[in-house]
Image (cartoon, rainbow over all chains, first blue to last red; front, top):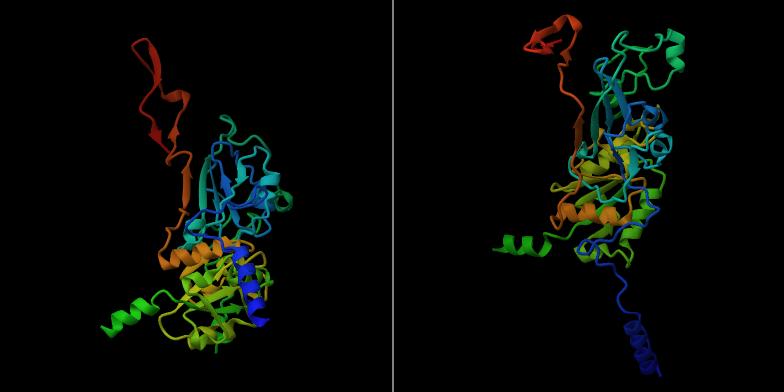
Amino acid sequence: MSLLSKIEETLLCLKAGRATLPYPAQPKPAPETFRGRPIFDAYKCIGCAGCANNCPAREILIFDVSQEIRVLQYLGRRCTYCGRCVEVCPEKAITMSLDSESATDRVGDLGQRLELFMSTCQRCGRCFKLPSALEELKMKGYRFDDLRNERWIFRSQGRLEGDPVVDDLEIELD
Amino acid sequence: MLKTLCQRMFGRSLWVYHANSGGCNGCDIEVLNALTPYYDVERFGIKLVGSPRHADVMLCQGPAMRSTAQALKRAYDAMPVPKLVFAVGSCACGGGIWFDSYAVIGPVEKIIPVSYYVPGCPPRPEAIIYGVAVALGLVDKKVVPVEFKGMELPIPNYHPDKLRGRDELVVYEKAEKI
């Protein structure tokens, strides 16, 4: 009896076959609804910084090097792939790719950096009135981020600290 | 000879210790998913162990928090020396959404050195397996940093005063850099 049941069990196991995915050998594409890492199209981007202001992880940084050049830096390291930047982009310059296999040994590999040419009025340089300090706080997309320290800074605050992250780690770790 | 034999036998067998230092359990579930028979990481000799003293690899999930930084550091120090650290998920790679909160110190690389980063929130089980395969040298990494430059600095300065006549044409004289 027990032998019969064992044979039956063996047959069942043979019938089930192999369920394991032969993954790294064969590619397994993500489903269509998957949101992978965002791809920035520099030719469509107008540099409005809507993505930078809507990023919940605050990881798209904006820096105006000069009046004509705006740097948009996507760090990629703490991105939650929520897709809000795609939603808010007026020119559809950002697309969420299906690529999830972004494991790397250098965290800088995940970043994207666009240096955009912002054309301005030839006569006045900038075709809008300069915002007051209070308006600058409300005005999104007009920031002066600290790219080296990867910090979000409003221009009205206007301070660039050397190491703004928590520095009492030595106290914490005895 | 014994050494080479040992290297051949045990070289590809990683024992994994799984350290959650304040994550939301999303990455934990994906790591658990990678251990199931469907995505069978035991093919690569990977085994989950309960103690950092048995482990070769530490899978870090969640950011380094003020309350767990010391425990994370102690767990890292307890691991025997050829050790790898995987930062799994956005929180471990870069601090997550609440990276600037008072309770969060930041990414785990502020506490312990990280050798491989697997971003994602949470990463797919395929992405975690891909990271392991990159570490084992089975596949190559795919991501490269992207840099686009719209225009080079310095920008040429054009002004009507700089217009000069040159046989039937009116052209700018050699553009002076700002």
